[in-house]
Image 1: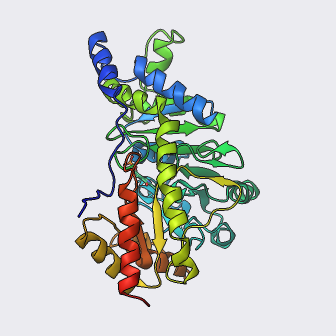
Image 2: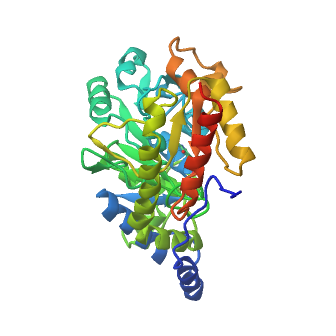
Image 3: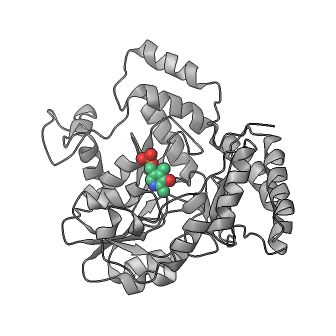
Length: 379
Ligand SMILES: *Cc1c(COP(=O)(O)O)cnc(C)c1O
């Protein structure tokens, strides 16, 4: 029997060399050589004009909420089927969270269910690119424009994905990425904020530097730096940036390796889908995803739980995913949107399979065990 971990970060080998180099310069706080290098790599990769390294996607979303000047009474629309940080960043500023349902095909926010949730108080829509697959952004941006509200992409999982040829992260007013150990490109903890709407650029740099104009000072634009605005310390140190630089230089390779595993799963499970036993994700022509996650949707929760148990007994770490936020202890306080049926159905019937860049033949073992499960429990 094999042991198959759910996730295992890919290490390029250059990380330690770059960290060594950072140490030798004795410049270890934020915004040094490696931070600049990492930001340039991101900007070139995604074809965006500004990226700012942060210490997490959570921090990036909190910066976005500060930049939008979210205050009590404002409403923010986001899927219930997401990680807590998507909501928390705005809840921290006192916003009312309005939960939208998702689509069955790809578990992304259902763009057709957004308009009915908009009110005079709506300040922003936060689409989450689930499993790294971009949401239907043309429609979402159109709705935002018509209603004069902002779009912040939670692109935590979507580094390297595209929508109609444009990168995830290049589509909203702002976007937040994660480099947490569980994502494709990692630095342990880490993230970045992409600022596409130029109106937010100046303040973004101030908020990230404790509310000071330190950046302008270092660039020789002002002769002393001082308290200009609210802010916090959102920037990572150089050791993290050095590690991340090694990863970003190999981002295409890492995503390509994951894609091979993803394609293998997708192809091999076609038969089970034809037999009506499972559903695989379905993506539109507009979407190229980064193979962040591979999941199957089972017929119901009982079958799903049985499959997870069966896999675990055979050494395969498979798992379910989010508890819908509207069902969570804290999330229950927000107004009930009546129709979150697909969110609830998906949450109770999804199983995520192990996927990581160098898992190699282990993916065949996972496929075998899933096949065995359906042979034994043939219904
Ligand atoms: C991972 C993740 C986050 C949080 O990322 P951190 O870098 O750990 O803060 C937020 N949103 C989504 C959708 C995520 O998958």
